[in-house]
Length: 421
Ligand code: SF4
Image (cartoon, rainbow, N blue to C red; front, side, top):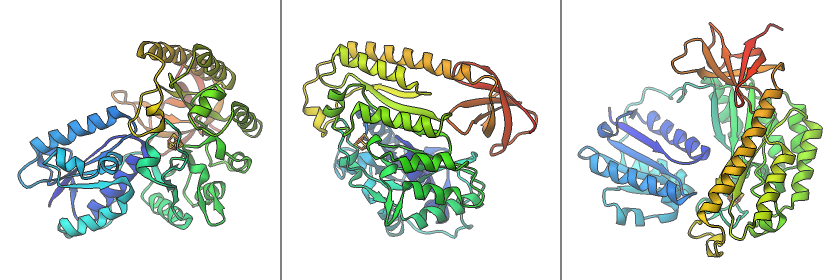
């Protein structure tokens, strides 16, 4: 039986795309191998968001080109494949095919054309030993934030028809999945005729067997009251809203072309807290955007204090060739960026700790994701917001849901005990 090896770089959408492609290969009778040296087909699904991600992917592709066995094929997919196209083949001669992220649907045609089909043993089951799965509901982005390469490589927004999303979810439920994360660059601008993202969430939540639904990522300009009310009213929709703010100053937000003001953003936070008081709100925050002054960075710290995010993904600006911000003069030195990033991380870590510490004594449901390595009785899970949980328990399994009480906090995990209700 021929075998394939998959390496994925980048975001959750790339992981979801890789899973879809892996399924297609398994359906066609290929075996998945964990050893690239044995594979008949090596696929590298690439990311373009940062230069560093492209550098790592290129190094991996070159390495595969050197070590792949005689006759093995090397294919490159994803965002870097979209951005650089056939130039990858010119630079790395061992690459056989390049399929850009906007042409994922051509992958099957490439499979049929270039690789033989084998007797298959049926539709593959779950690809991961986890109760959760990602479902891409829309692709592309039209927001053109000035620092971001995504609109150039992923193209305009395209929503997956709601009926397709729902039937995919139902199939995954049959395979044992109970928690779904709906993915898109900007899920809350989802649209299928009259169906908006809030409607789609309700449709997915009502598929029999679905226990939890999450989504990422949202753009503050498209976050509606209807969406927040829908989450508040539907118990299987998780109390977690990821609402990337990026910066705490209106001037920097405008330079980033984020298309909302700080007042608008804080209004959304107030609305979320009003309808879902226990919501975990998380964010993406960037420091050192071209032109960011010390005072404007202080504005970001003040915003973080005010919102009290449960956690945040924090990073320093790095210029990305091909974006509008790449032509802006960089004014913040690498040292200053790193020192601002450290101050921001220190502040957010102390807020995360306060939030976790104040949750001690609370009772909630936890969905078990898996066992902690090396510790037999210790299980990892999540509450129905975005808090990590450790549970000591004799007989658990990934996918089980328990009622628990938080008895201790490590500052970034709640240590819980089971309770009966
Ligand atoms: S919303 Fe902005 S940051 Fe997000 S993918 Fe689109 S352009 Fe990039």
